[in-house]
Image 1 (cartoon, rainbow, N blue to C red):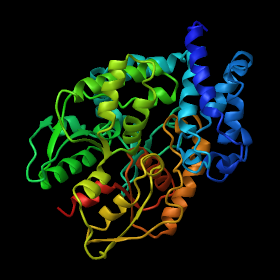
Image 2: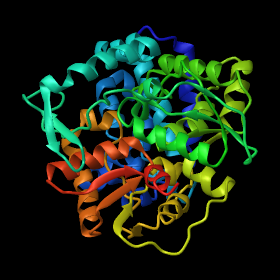
Image 3: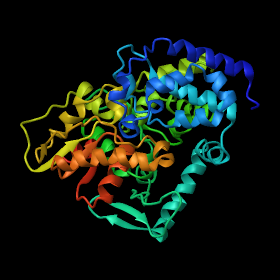
Image 4: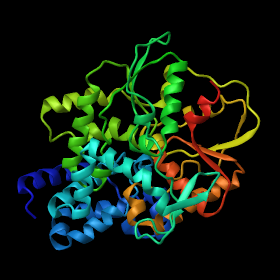
Length: 429
Protein backbone atom coordinates (compact mmCIF):
# COMPACT_ATOMS: atom_id res chain seq x y z
CA UNK A 1 0.00 0.00 0.00
CA UNK A 2 3.04 2.25 0.25
CA UNK A 3 3.66 2.25 -3.49
CA UNK A 4 4.29 5.61 -5.11
CA UNK A 5 0.93 6.95 -6.29
CA UNK A 6 2.37 8.85 -9.25
CA UNK A 7 4.20 5.77 -10.51
CA UNK A 8 1.03 3.69 -10.31
CA UNK A 9 -0.98 6.38 -12.10
CA UNK A 10 1.54 6.46 -14.95
CA UNK A 11 1.52 2.68 -15.25
CA UNK A 12 -2.27 2.60 -15.31
CA UNK A 13 -2.36 5.27 -18.02
CA UNK A 14 0.06 3.26 -20.19
CA UNK A 15 -2.09 0.17 -19.70
CA UNK A 16 -5.25 2.01 -20.79
CA UNK A 17 -3.56 3.09 -24.02
CA UNK A 18 -2.77 -0.55 -24.89
CA UNK A 19 -6.23 -1.95 -24.18
CA UNK A 20 -8.34 0.34 -26.39
CA UNK A 21 -7.86 -1.82 -29.50
CA UNK A 22 -9.52 -4.90 -27.96
CA UNK A 23 -12.88 -5.33 -29.75
CA UNK A 24 -14.12 -8.01 -27.31
CA UNK A 25 -14.69 -10.29 -30.32
CA UNK A 26 -13.99 -13.41 -28.27
CA UNK A 27 -11.74 -15.16 -30.78
CA UNK A 28 -9.26 -15.65 -27.95
CA UNK A 29 -11.65 -18.22 -26.48
CA UNK A 30 -10.88 -20.66 -29.27
CA UNK A 31 -7.14 -20.77 -28.54
CA UNK A 32 -6.87 -20.24 -24.77
CA UNK A 33 -5.75 -23.52 -23.10
CA UNK A 34 -7.05 -22.37 -19.71
CA UNK A 35 -10.51 -21.48 -21.07
CA UNK A 36 -10.67 -24.88 -22.80
CA UNK A 37 -10.58 -26.49 -19.36
CA UNK A 38 -12.53 -24.04 -17.17
CA UNK A 39 -14.96 -22.54 -19.73
CA UNK A 40 -14.92 -19.41 -17.56
CA UNK A 41 -15.09 -16.04 -19.34
CA UNK A 42 -12.93 -14.50 -16.62
CA UNK A 43 -10.07 -16.83 -17.57
CA UNK A 44 -9.86 -15.77 -21.20
CA UNK A 45 -8.06 -12.68 -22.51
CA UNK A 46 -11.25 -10.77 -23.30
CA UNK A 47 -12.53 -11.25 -19.77
CA UNK A 48 -9.27 -10.19 -18.18
CA UNK A 49 -9.07 -7.05 -20.32
CA UNK A 50 -12.62 -6.15 -19.28
CA UNK A 51 -11.47 -6.46 -15.68
CA UNK A 52 -8.37 -4.37 -16.33
CA UNK A 53 -10.37 -1.52 -17.87
CA UNK A 54 -11.48 -0.73 -14.31
CA UNK A 55 -8.23 -1.78 -12.70
CA UNK A 56 -7.80 1.23 -10.39
CA UNK A 57 -11.26 0.76 -8.91
CA UNK A 58 -10.99 -3.04 -8.75
CA UNK A 59 -7.60 -2.86 -6.99
CA UNK A 60 -9.05 -0.75 -4.22
CA UNK A 61 -12.17 -2.90 -3.81
CA UNK A 62 -10.65 -6.38 -4.17
CA UNK A 63 -6.90 -6.45 -4.87
CA UNK A 64 -6.60 -10.16 -4.03
CA UNK A 65 -9.40 -10.98 -6.45
CA UNK A 66 -7.73 -9.04 -9.25
CA UNK A 67 -4.43 -10.74 -8.55
CA UNK A 68 -6.06 -14.17 -8.59
CA UNK A 69 -7.67 -13.52 -11.97
CA UNK A 70 -4.44 -12.20 -13.49
CA UNK A 71 -2.51 -15.23 -12.27
CA UNK A 72 -4.99 -17.59 -13.94
CA UNK A 73 -3.00 -17.29 -17.16
CA UNK A 74 -0.17 -19.32 -18.67
CA UNK A 75 1.32 -16.27 -20.44
CA UNK A 76 1.57 -18.57 -23.47
CA UNK A 77 0.67 -15.82 -25.95
CA UNK A 78 -1.88 -17.92 -27.85
CA UNK A 79 -4.47 -15.15 -27.61
CA UNK A 80 -2.06 -12.48 -28.88
CA UNK A 81 -0.87 -14.67 -31.77
CA UNK A 82 -4.46 -15.14 -32.95
CA UNK A 83 -5.88 -11.68 -32.20
CA UNK A 84 -7.30 -10.01 -35.36
CA UNK A 85 -6.82 -6.56 -33.81
CA UNK A 86 -3.19 -7.18 -32.90
CA UNK A 87 -3.74 -6.56 -29.20
CA UNK A 88 -0.49 -7.21 -27.34
CA UNK A 89 -2.18 -9.22 -24.65
CA UNK A 90 1.00 -10.66 -23.12
CA UNK A 91 2.44 -7.16 -22.71
CA UNK A 92 -0.76 -5.98 -21.04
CA UNK A 93 -0.94 -8.87 -18.59
CA UNK A 94 2.71 -8.57 -17.56
CA UNK A 95 2.34 -4.84 -16.91
CA UNK A 96 -0.92 -5.43 -15.03
CA UNK A 97 0.77 -7.96 -12.76
CA UNK A 98 3.48 -5.42 -12.00
CA UNK A 99 0.85 -2.77 -11.19
CA UNK A 100 -1.13 -5.04 -8.86
CA UNK A 101 1.94 -6.35 -7.07
CA UNK A 102 3.40 -2.86 -6.77
CA UNK A 103 0.14 -1.82 -5.10
CA UNK A 104 -0.15 -4.89 -2.84
CA UNK A 105 3.48 -5.66 -2.17
CA UNK A 106 5.19 -8.98 -2.86
CA UNK A 107 4.37 -11.97 -0.57
CA UNK A 108 7.14 -12.84 1.88
CA UNK A 109 7.94 -16.19 0.25
CA UNK A 110 8.34 -14.71 -3.22
CA UNK A 111 10.33 -11.80 -1.84
CA UNK A 112 12.76 -14.26 -0.24
CA UNK A 113 13.10 -16.27 -3.46
CA UNK A 114 13.40 -13.42 -5.95
CA UNK A 115 15.09 -10.67 -3.94
CA UNK A 116 17.03 -12.82 -1.49
CA UNK A 117 18.14 -15.59 -3.84
CA UNK A 118 17.48 -15.18 -7.58
CA UNK A 119 19.07 -11.72 -7.83
CA UNK A 120 22.24 -13.10 -6.23
CA UNK A 121 23.49 -15.59 -8.86
CA UNK A 122 26.45 -16.88 -6.83
CA UNK A 123 24.27 -17.62 -3.80
CA UNK A 124 21.52 -19.11 -5.97
CA UNK A 125 24.01 -21.44 -7.63
CA UNK A 126 25.54 -22.48 -4.31
CA UNK A 127 22.17 -23.35 -2.75
CA UNK A 128 21.18 -25.55 -5.69
CA UNK A 129 24.64 -27.17 -5.78
CA UNK A 130 24.10 -28.29 -2.18
CA UNK A 131 20.53 -29.40 -2.95
CA UNK A 132 21.73 -31.58 -5.83
CA UNK A 133 23.96 -33.57 -3.48
CA UNK A 134 21.18 -34.45 -1.04
CA UNK A 135 18.17 -34.81 -3.35
CA UNK A 136 18.54 -38.60 -3.48
CA UNK A 137 17.61 -38.85 0.19
CA UNK A 138 14.13 -37.50 -0.52
CA UNK A 139 13.50 -38.71 -4.08
CA UNK A 140 13.44 -41.95 -6.08
CA UNK A 141 13.42 -42.87 -9.78
CA UNK A 142 9.96 -42.74 -11.35
CA UNK A 143 10.58 -43.53 -15.03
CA UNK A 144 13.96 -44.78 -16.25
CA UNK A 145 13.34 -43.96 -19.92
CA UNK A 146 12.53 -40.35 -19.13
CA UNK A 147 14.91 -40.07 -16.18
CA UNK A 148 12.24 -38.57 -13.93
CA UNK A 149 11.99 -38.77 -10.16
CA UNK A 150 9.25 -38.55 -7.58
CA UNK A 151 9.20 -37.81 -3.86
CA UNK A 152 9.71 -40.59 -1.32
CA UNK A 153 7.37 -38.75 1.04
CA UNK A 154 4.27 -36.64 0.53
CA UNK A 155 5.80 -33.18 0.17
CA UNK A 156 3.53 -30.09 0.13
CA UNK A 157 5.12 -28.45 -2.94
CA UNK A 158 6.06 -31.56 -4.92
CA UNK A 159 2.85 -33.49 -4.31
CA UNK A 160 2.26 -36.12 -6.99
CA UNK A 161 4.60 -34.53 -9.52
CA UNK A 162 7.18 -36.51 -11.43
CA UNK A 163 10.09 -34.13 -11.87
CA UNK A 164 13.55 -34.06 -13.41
CA UNK A 165 16.27 -34.11 -10.74
CA UNK A 166 18.98 -31.50 -10.50
CA UNK A 167 22.04 -32.48 -12.51
CA UNK A 168 24.90 -34.02 -10.54
CA UNK A 169 27.09 -31.30 -12.03
CA UNK A 170 25.72 -28.08 -13.55
CA UNK A 171 26.86 -26.94 -16.97
CA UNK A 172 29.07 -24.21 -15.50
CA UNK A 173 31.12 -26.95 -13.73
CA UNK A 174 31.20 -29.27 -16.72
CA UNK A 175 32.25 -26.60 -19.20
CA UNK A 176 34.63 -23.75 -18.48
CA UNK A 177 33.74 -20.21 -19.59
CA UNK A 178 34.42 -19.75 -23.31
CA UNK A 179 35.89 -16.86 -25.25
CA UNK A 180 36.95 -18.31 -28.60
CA UNK A 181 37.42 -16.61 -31.93
CA UNK A 182 35.40 -17.49 -35.06
CA UNK A 183 36.69 -20.13 -37.45
CA UNK A 184 35.64 -20.79 -41.03
CA UNK A 185 32.04 -19.83 -40.34
CA UNK A 186 33.08 -16.24 -39.70
CA UNK A 187 30.55 -15.97 -36.88
CA UNK A 188 30.98 -15.46 -33.17
CA UNK A 189 28.10 -16.04 -30.78
CA UNK A 190 27.46 -15.47 -27.11
CA UNK A 191 25.73 -18.37 -25.36
CA UNK A 192 23.14 -17.90 -22.60
CA UNK A 193 22.31 -21.34 -21.15
CA UNK A 194 19.67 -20.14 -18.67
CA UNK A 195 18.77 -21.67 -15.32
CA UNK A 196 17.22 -24.98 -16.42
CA UNK A 197 19.95 -25.92 -18.88
CA UNK A 198 22.65 -25.06 -16.36
CA UNK A 199 21.07 -26.85 -13.41
CA UNK A 200 18.84 -29.60 -14.82
CA UNK A 201 19.72 -30.24 -18.46
CA UNK A 202 23.47 -29.54 -18.86
CA UNK A 203 23.57 -32.04 -21.76
CA UNK A 204 21.64 -29.50 -23.84
CA UNK A 205 24.30 -26.87 -23.22
CA UNK A 206 27.03 -29.37 -24.08
CA UNK A 207 25.22 -30.21 -27.32
CA UNK A 208 25.13 -26.52 -28.26
CA UNK A 209 28.85 -26.13 -27.58
CA UNK A 210 29.61 -29.28 -29.62
CA UNK A 211 27.56 -27.94 -32.52
CA UNK A 212 29.31 -24.56 -32.47
CA UNK A 213 32.73 -26.23 -32.39
CA UNK A 214 31.76 -28.44 -35.34
CA UNK A 215 30.62 -25.46 -37.42
CA UNK A 216 33.68 -23.44 -36.33
CA UNK A 217 31.64 -20.73 -34.65
CA UNK A 218 33.40 -18.67 -32.00
CA UNK A 219 31.76 -18.83 -28.57
CA UNK A 220 31.62 -16.31 -25.75
CA UNK A 221 30.13 -17.99 -22.68
CA UNK A 222 31.01 -15.80 -19.69
CA UNK A 223 30.82 -16.65 -16.01
CA UNK A 224 28.46 -14.67 -13.77
CA UNK A 225 25.31 -15.03 -15.85
CA UNK A 226 21.97 -14.59 -14.06
CA UNK A 227 18.40 -15.74 -14.65
CA UNK A 228 16.71 -14.01 -17.61
CA UNK A 229 14.24 -12.54 -15.10
CA UNK A 230 10.90 -13.90 -16.32
CA UNK A 231 10.02 -15.76 -13.07
CA UNK A 232 10.26 -12.51 -11.12
CA UNK A 233 8.42 -10.42 -13.71
CA UNK A 234 5.62 -12.98 -14.08
CA UNK A 235 5.08 -12.58 -10.34
CA UNK A 236 5.01 -8.80 -10.67
CA UNK A 237 8.45 -8.17 -9.14
CA UNK A 238 9.77 -5.52 -11.52
CA UNK A 239 12.65 -4.50 -9.25
CA UNK A 240 14.16 -8.00 -9.22
CA UNK A 241 13.58 -8.28 -12.96
CA UNK A 242 15.50 -5.04 -13.57
CA UNK A 243 18.41 -6.24 -11.42
CA UNK A 244 18.65 -9.53 -13.32
CA UNK A 245 18.53 -7.78 -16.70
CA UNK A 246 21.24 -5.34 -15.62
CA UNK A 247 23.43 -8.19 -14.39
CA UNK A 248 23.24 -9.97 -17.73
CA UNK A 249 23.75 -6.80 -19.74
CA UNK A 250 26.90 -6.04 -17.73
CA UNK A 251 28.25 -9.54 -18.38
CA UNK A 252 27.53 -9.80 -22.10
CA UNK A 253 28.39 -6.33 -23.32
CA UNK A 254 32.03 -6.86 -22.35
CA UNK A 255 32.67 -8.63 -25.66
CA UNK A 256 31.60 -8.25 -29.28
CA UNK A 257 29.63 -11.00 -31.02
CA UNK A 258 27.15 -11.44 -33.84
CA UNK A 259 24.32 -13.19 -32.02
CA UNK A 260 23.30 -14.00 -28.46
CA UNK A 261 22.00 -17.57 -28.63
CA UNK A 262 19.78 -19.45 -26.21
CA UNK A 263 18.40 -23.00 -26.33
CA UNK A 264 15.43 -22.02 -24.17
CA UNK A 265 12.32 -20.64 -25.88
CA UNK A 266 11.26 -18.74 -22.76
CA UNK A 267 14.66 -17.10 -22.30
CA UNK A 268 14.78 -16.20 -25.99
CA UNK A 269 11.39 -14.48 -25.98
CA UNK A 270 12.10 -12.78 -22.64
CA UNK A 271 15.42 -11.33 -23.72
CA UNK A 272 14.39 -10.41 -27.27
CA UNK A 273 10.87 -9.12 -26.61
CA UNK A 274 10.28 -8.44 -22.92
CA UNK A 275 13.59 -6.88 -21.89
CA UNK A 276 13.05 -3.84 -24.18
CA UNK A 277 9.30 -3.77 -23.46
CA UNK A 278 9.76 -3.40 -19.71
CA UNK A 279 12.70 -1.00 -19.81
CA UNK A 280 10.65 2.20 -20.28
CA UNK A 281 11.07 3.37 -16.68
CA UNK A 282 14.87 3.03 -16.77
CA UNK A 283 17.39 5.75 -17.70
CA UNK A 284 17.74 6.21 -21.46
CA UNK A 285 21.32 4.97 -21.40
CA UNK A 286 20.17 1.67 -19.87
CA UNK A 287 17.30 1.39 -22.34
CA UNK A 288 19.80 1.75 -25.17
CA UNK A 289 22.10 -0.91 -23.73
CA UNK A 290 19.20 -3.35 -23.32
CA UNK A 291 17.93 -2.67 -26.84
CA UNK A 292 21.38 -3.20 -28.35
CA UNK A 293 21.70 -6.61 -26.70
CA UNK A 294 18.10 -7.68 -27.28
CA UNK A 295 18.39 -7.23 -31.05
CA UNK A 296 21.14 -9.88 -31.11
CA UNK A 297 19.11 -12.52 -29.26
CA UNK A 298 18.24 -15.56 -31.39
CA UNK A 299 17.05 -19.11 -30.83
CA UNK A 300 19.73 -21.71 -31.56
CA UNK A 301 17.49 -23.60 -34.04
CA UNK A 302 16.94 -20.41 -36.02
CA UNK A 303 20.66 -19.63 -36.04
CA UNK A 304 21.60 -23.05 -37.36
CA UNK A 305 19.03 -23.04 -40.17
CA UNK A 306 18.69 -19.36 -41.12
CA UNK A 307 22.28 -18.21 -40.55
CA UNK A 308 24.49 -21.29 -40.93
CA UNK A 309 22.15 -22.73 -43.60
CA UNK A 310 22.05 -26.27 -42.20
CA UNK A 311 20.04 -28.45 -44.56
CA UNK A 312 18.26 -31.77 -44.13
CA UNK A 313 19.36 -34.73 -46.27
CA UNK A 314 16.93 -37.39 -47.52
CA UNK A 315 14.28 -38.52 -45.06
CA UNK A 316 15.65 -40.67 -42.26
CA UNK A 317 14.42 -43.97 -40.88
CA UNK A 318 14.58 -45.54 -37.45
CA UNK A 319 13.50 -43.92 -34.20
CA UNK A 320 10.19 -42.14 -34.51
CA UNK A 321 10.47 -38.57 -33.23
CA UNK A 322 7.71 -35.99 -32.91
CA UNK A 323 7.98 -32.30 -32.07
CA UNK A 324 6.18 -30.01 -29.62
CA UNK A 325 6.13 -26.29 -30.48
CA UNK A 326 6.97 -24.23 -27.38
CA UNK A 327 4.55 -21.31 -27.15
CA UNK A 328 7.24 -18.68 -26.76
CA UNK A 329 9.19 -20.04 -29.71
CA UNK A 330 6.39 -20.30 -32.25
CA UNK A 331 3.96 -17.62 -31.07
CA UNK A 332 6.43 -15.00 -29.87
CA UNK A 333 9.53 -15.65 -31.99
CA UNK A 334 7.80 -17.15 -35.08
CA UNK A 335 10.24 -20.07 -35.08
CA UNK A 336 8.61 -23.34 -36.06
CA UNK A 337 9.99 -24.90 -39.24
CA UNK A 338 13.65 -24.60 -38.25
CA UNK A 339 13.59 -27.16 -35.40
CA UNK A 340 11.66 -29.59 -37.59
CA UNK A 341 14.31 -29.29 -40.29
CA UNK A 342 17.06 -29.94 -37.76
CA UNK A 343 15.33 -33.11 -36.60
CA UNK A 344 15.25 -34.31 -40.20
CA UNK A 345 19.03 -33.94 -40.49
CA UNK A 346 19.41 -37.05 -38.32
CA UNK A 347 19.37 -40.05 -40.70
CA UNK A 348 18.44 -42.35 -37.82
CA UNK A 349 15.25 -40.40 -37.11
CA UNK A 350 11.84 -40.73 -38.72
CA UNK A 351 9.97 -37.49 -38.08
CA UNK A 352 6.25 -37.79 -37.34
CA UNK A 353 3.97 -34.81 -36.73
CA UNK A 354 1.68 -34.96 -33.72
CA UNK A 355 -1.80 -33.45 -33.64
CA UNK A 356 -2.01 -29.91 -32.25
CA UNK A 357 1.77 -29.64 -32.01
CA UNK A 358 1.53 -25.96 -31.04
CA UNK A 359 -1.02 -26.47 -28.25
CA UNK A 360 0.38 -25.22 -24.93
CA UNK A 361 1.76 -27.98 -22.70
CA UNK A 362 0.33 -26.27 -19.60
CA UNK A 363 3.54 -25.43 -17.75
CA UNK A 364 3.55 -21.64 -17.58
CA UNK A 365 6.28 -21.48 -14.92
CA UNK A 366 4.66 -20.36 -11.66
CA UNK A 367 1.25 -21.33 -13.09
CA UNK A 368 2.28 -24.96 -12.64
CA UNK A 369 3.08 -24.30 -8.99
CA UNK A 370 -0.09 -22.36 -8.17
CA UNK A 371 -2.60 -24.25 -10.34
CA UNK A 372 -1.15 -27.73 -10.70
CA UNK A 373 -4.46 -29.54 -11.16
CA UNK A 374 -5.36 -27.29 -14.09
CA UNK A 375 -1.80 -27.42 -15.42
CA UNK A 376 -1.98 -31.21 -15.34
CA UNK A 377 -5.31 -31.28 -17.21
CA UNK A 378 -3.82 -29.16 -20.00
CA UNK A 379 -0.62 -31.21 -19.97
CA UNK A 380 -2.54 -34.48 -20.25
CA UNK A 381 -3.96 -33.32 -23.58
CA UNK A 382 -0.40 -32.84 -24.79
CA UNK A 383 0.59 -36.26 -23.47
CA UNK A 384 -2.30 -37.89 -25.30
CA UNK A 385 -1.25 -36.28 -28.60
CA UNK A 386 2.35 -37.43 -28.12
CA UNK A 387 1.31 -41.02 -27.40
CA UNK A 388 -1.13 -41.02 -30.34
CA UNK A 389 1.75 -40.10 -32.68
CA UNK A 390 3.43 -43.42 -31.71
CA UNK A 391 6.74 -41.58 -31.40
CA UNK A 392 9.50 -43.04 -29.25
CA UNK A 393 10.97 -39.58 -28.61
CA UNK A 394 9.33 -36.19 -28.25
CA UNK A 395 11.61 -33.27 -29.00
CA UNK A 396 11.12 -29.59 -28.25
CA UNK A 397 13.03 -26.34 -27.91
CA UNK A 398 12.20 -25.34 -24.32
CA UNK A 399 13.51 -26.91 -21.10
CA UNK A 400 10.37 -25.78 -19.21
CA UNK A 401 8.20 -27.66 -21.71
CA UNK A 402 10.50 -30.66 -21.24
CA UNK A 403 9.81 -30.61 -17.49
CA UNK A 404 6.04 -30.51 -17.98
CA UNK A 405 5.96 -33.13 -20.73
CA UNK A 406 8.25 -35.42 -18.73
CA UNK A 407 5.90 -35.14 -15.75
CA UNK A 408 2.82 -36.01 -17.81
CA UNK A 409 4.43 -38.95 -19.65
CA UNK A 410 6.08 -40.30 -16.51
CA UNK A 411 2.88 -40.29 -14.48
CA UNK A 412 1.19 -42.34 -17.21
CA UNK A 413 4.15 -44.77 -17.29
CA UNK A 414 4.83 -43.96 -20.94
CA UNK A 415 8.18 -45.07 -22.35
CA UNK A 416 8.73 -41.97 -24.47
CA UNK A 417 12.03 -40.13 -24.12
CA UNK A 418 12.01 -36.31 -23.92
CA UNK A 419 14.86 -34.48 -25.64
CA UNK A 420 15.87 -31.08 -26.93
CA UNK A 421 16.19 -30.69 -30.70
CA UNK A 422 19.88 -29.81 -30.47
CA UNK A 423 20.62 -33.07 -28.66
CA UNK A 424 19.35 -35.04 -31.64
CA UNK A 425 21.12 -32.78 -34.14
CA UNK A 426 24.41 -33.05 -32.23
CA UNK A 427 24.23 -36.85 -32.58
CA UNK A 428 24.82 -36.45 -36.32
CA UNK A 429 28.10 -34.55 -35.98
